[in-house]
Amino acid sequence: MTQLPVAERAGVRRAAAGLVRADRRPFAAVLGLNALAAGAGLAGPWLLGRIVDEVRAGGGVGAVDRMALAILLCSLAQLLLSRWARFVGHRFGERTLARVRERYVDRVLALPASVVERAGTGDLTTRGTADVTAVGTTLRDAGPELLVNAVQAVFLTGAVFVLDPLLGLVGVVGLTPAWVALRWYLRRARAAYLAEGAAGSEVAESLSATVAGARTVEAFGLADRRVATNREALEVSRRARMRTLFLRSVFFPAVDVSYVLPVAGVLLSGGFLHAHGSVSLGAVVSCAVYLQQLAGPLDEVLMRTEELQAGAASFARVEGLAGAPRARADDSAVPAHDRIDVSGVRYAYERGGEVLRGVDLTVRPGERLAVVGPSGAGKTTLSRLLAGVDGPTEGSVTVGGVPVVSLGPERLRRQVVLVTQEHHVFLGTVRDNLLIAEPAAGEGELWAALGAVGAEGWVRDLPDGLDTELGAAEHAHSTDGSQAQQLALARVVLADPHTLILDEATALLDPATARNTEQALAAVLEGRTVIAIAHRLHTAHDADRVAVMEDGLLTELGTHDELVAAGGAYAALWGSWHGEPSDGTAAAADGAGPAGGRGGEASVYRK
Image (cartoon, rainbow, N blue to C red; front, side, top):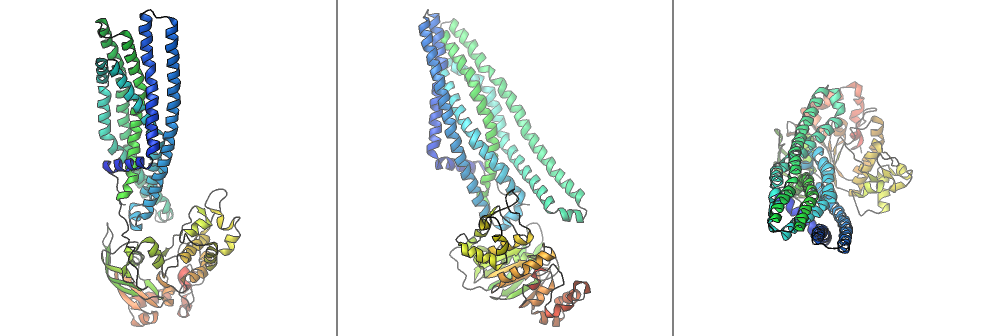
């Protein structure tokens, strides 16, 4: 798998600044309210020092009561302003998180299918769930709390310097161990949290691959190998997690010890200065209280800094999609016609040899073309290039003179659609699942598309018709394989492409389901160019032309009868397949499909 990019520090800072600019007024309000709350909190220690000096000077109870009431009112004001600041901060965080989620979804949808496949679902899933959640926690909780406590810490430190600069300097020097521990932690934290996130993605990818291929794993006795692979991924994740735990276990104790030093330093130096008449006792008491109060905000700041590092690493992974390759769409290019031309195409995957080694092919509008050949010949790779999923390493694949890979998503789905054996039902209503293909479609068009693929009956029987929720939830309708395929084909009808590429579109369906969907598939194919990756030769028998792939080369091209008469590779395949009496292929010559067979494409070309 190829890891998706991670944003650099500068990119994360630019993205964070952009989020702040998008909601600058609430952000300014958070800062202002925190400043007012911190200012109100400064009055208490200062008034306490005044009380000490007043009592030493022989002041009465009335003066003490007035200052005590002032302390109470300032504390109440600080409480209200802090709560208001947190409320505004949380709202800012939720709105900003919504922007992050929307931007992430937009970027994922803009990724070329080839990039998504190479990255794997585990990395994208982890970034879209765990990492986005971590960013949300930072924006909703850590961010506002960090602002509140950072402003308070700055104001408290400033108050000590205002009362006595020398005591302020002593207090700051006492915080030096905390600063050293923070620097040590920050130099290591980002890399450690990024490694932890990457390891989590690898675990998710390994587990999802194991679950998706569970039947294959069981059939080939690969359970021990998959267990070993998963354990290895978990071990890497455990070591990455232990690294971040080690950083925290060193950072937090060092910081906790540092809180005592400023107060002790101010009391000792303040006592010495007071003994020499350089500072009043009230000022020493006020400075000591300020620094004692500083421990709370400073502790929160350092705690939130740790959360901020985790959140920043997650944000770097989420924001990293901005640097991922984008589909090179040319919206100005309009295909002049519907003919597909493949010229000198070569293709090699990143971690493998060359799959296609110079393929030339022209698919005429309205033609039924079957592509056959042994496994590994390059049939599926060719279908991906024809559909614009991948671009050729050399050569060109064009439709109407325009490279297929350069077409934007909207124009591409009007030209070429690849239908595979994987049919996805999205969470949402039936209407939502159909409007993905044509957002502007009206009610009548939706019902017409469902009717074309034979799905109108069961959709009308649903409790809310088009507005029935689909999925595995308690009150949702769970679709079976046939219904899922019909919804996928209805989307094809709404998209209305001129060319359909079928790569074993019904291979995963049971025989009964496959037979039930053949009529729906035939309705979708009516009047369109069809290219079928054929694993069953009945499809080739009914096609207008047959293309034979061998070892990445197009070795034969012609009608079924021409290729059989030529006595080449296709004739050998046909003879081998036709000679198996158990398939019921004796009727193949007149176009009959295998009795009870699973070949959903068996009738797609039948005229």
